[in-house]
Each structure stands twice: as C-alpha cells, then as structure tokens.
Image (cartoon, rainbow, N blue to C red; front, side, top):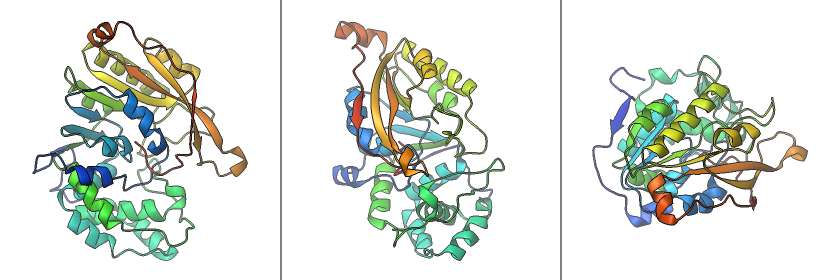
Length: 318
C-alpha cells in the first residue's frame, strides 16, 4: 500500500446513519469462515437495548454490524488488508467497483493476482484484489501464511459473482461515519465507555488439533490470547459496558466466562473438506451485563438449553 495511506485509525469524512433502505439491503461483501448469518436473530435478541456506541474488534465479514447498521460504530481487525478493503469501500466505492470489474474468473488470472504484493497497489485496487480472491478462492477462505501472503488455492464454482455492485454500494452507505481501525482487540476495548456495546467474534478455541482457522492474519491467536480476551471482557462489564462474545463450546471457554451468562447453540458448519464430517457443532454466545443493569432486571437470566440453528456455511464472519 502506498505510504500515503494509513490504516491505524481512519474515520469517514461524512458522518451520519445510512438510510433505512440501504441498512436493510446491505450484507457482507466478503465470505468469512464462521459466518454469523444464521445466528443473527439470536445475537440481535441478546444485544442491549439501547446502547451508545457499537464496537467490534474482530470485524471479519461484519454480518452482525451490517444487520444492526448502528449510527455510531468503531470497527477493527488486526488484518490490515481487510481493514483497507472496508476503508476503500466506505470512502470510494466507485473506484473499487471499477477495479473489480477488471477481474474475471479464470485460474491463471487468479494466481497472477494472488502473486501481487498488495502493499504496492493503490487502495482501490488492493480492495478489489481482496474481494476477487475471496470470491474466486477455494471455499471462500481468507488465509495467509506466516509471512502474511495470501495462500488459498483457486476455487471451483459455476459463474461466481465477482462484483456485486448494488451490495457494495449499500455497504458503503452503512459504513459512512464509521471509524475503522487496524488494531488489537485490547486497544479497541480500552476506548469503550459506559453504555457502549462491544461484540467479540474472535478466532475460536479449536475443538481439535485440526479444527483451527486462525490464520486470517500473519500470526496466531493463541490460548494465551483467549485468556487475555476473557480478562478484557470481564473488565468491560465491570466498567459498565455491555459485551457479547461468540466462541466454540469447549470446557476452556466455559471456564473463562463462567461468571457470565452462557447461551449454548448448535450450528451446522460446512468448512470440513470431508462431507461426512460436516454437521452441527456446539457454540456459545456469552453475554456480559453490567451490574446496574442486572440489578434493574432483578436477576441475571439463566443459561438456556442448546438451540439448533441452520447452516451458516462460510458466507461471512460477523
């Protein structure tokens, strides 16, 4: 990316909420492993009403954000290529659409674009490259190696949609006024104030040694990071901030968030290369309710029985 572009913290030049029509129409423009599309009704039911600012430190595909279309929001991720893509769509969607139209679904073209160094591209072309690789790559994965280079092979589809212009424009409208940061979750959470709402959708604690999809950025999200996240979650709630978190249903996750309400859900995922191994997996939604809110309710809600939710596949990560 040219030196003139910084991803540290960029706010939209135009403040204001997107129109209700655009807010309803916008949906994630990227596929993302662990997509929250089918979880949205449950997440929305657990969200506080009302809240001040919305913060999401693990942005991914942004399904929950797009479903809420909040007036005042801070979105962040450690993946600078991802954040750059959001910034380009927010600030100059016309240029992104023009760049994306130059791409076509073909193996040789895919690998040629994959080999490009995104840091050498203008922001609009870099965003178009990200979207193209995501739409044309295997299983909609966004995966990089330890050197930060995208390494997903070419996918096999029938006439995939590379440029969904109406949705890109709707997303641009919803993103107006939103602050976008390339930052660690702890830095983002530190800026939250009383009455704000923070949603965490981190890389999940793996349920097995092979079920680990954390390489969406150079570096790994370790168990030590999971413990650090739990401490940040506790701190937010103690400071009067509403918090919600998604993760796998494992003993470690239940231990880390034992003091909060834990809602169990069963979600069908389709990321396993072996169809015989695809099926319902256990996940949890953790809700942190500030003490004064709990007191006004009389008592915290009891954990619910597991719910069965439909396939959310790999459409987007919320």
